[in-house]
Amino acid sequence: MTLVTLYQAEWCPFSSAVRELLTELGIDAVIRQVEPYPEQRDALRELAGTDQIPVLQAEDGRLFRGTHEIFAHLRERQAWEHAADHRRRFRDHQAARESDATGRLLKQFSASDLDPGEPQSTPDQATIVDVPEEHRYELLLDGRRIGLLAYHRRGDRIAFTHTEVTPACEGRGFGSRLVAHALDDAREKGLVVAPLCPFTAQYIKRHPEYAELVAPEHRRLKGAATAPTPAPLSPERLSEK
Image 1 (cartoon, rainbow, N blue to C red):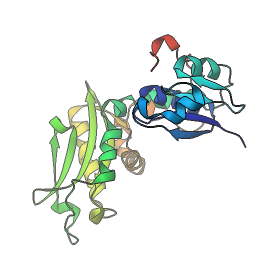
Image 2 (tube, one colour):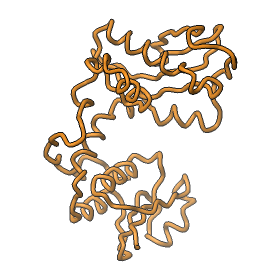
Image 3 (cartoon, rainbow, N blue to C red):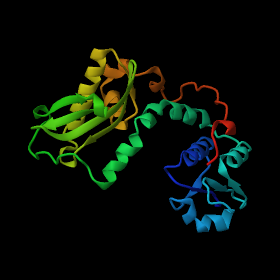
């Protein structure tokens, strides 16, 4: 099976926009990572005559350089049945993008700043504090941070974007206590909740007493009616790299 190939870099917003459209169109792709700086991209220049990204190579070998050409090509493709829902999920996760959830998760790859915790400790021994300047709740044991719940707040809405508990405390109820505290705090403050963090979403599913806090767009059930497919992105809205 021949797939399209996308020459890109994860940090590049133009590459990200193309990947989102590939998702909405249901197009499987081979992702080729390029060197970080244009002057290093000899192989890309030899292939496509450019050192700028993104570059899309179609199944038939045709090359499309930059978002203008790529978008024009993708408009010729037929969207699959899940296109509207994927675009809706893209909008629903705006708060996670604004709070740099990706950057926070990447920090885990190199090292975690969480304390290992005590093997015999229990959730009721921990304390939870809100650290608004860091946009997160922190789970503490004897003043040492063993967990965190990151959030993004705007007006009367709060989006929970990421939950992390030190491995020594995983599966022992620490994360649940942290999420429950954050949800109780949101209720007390009259906030609407966007559970972008999968752990938080699953916790609410298991504890329906918190369902009333959830924003309507995050309450959709499988099989519910979907909105019309939004208009495609206009190339004039994104400058080419």
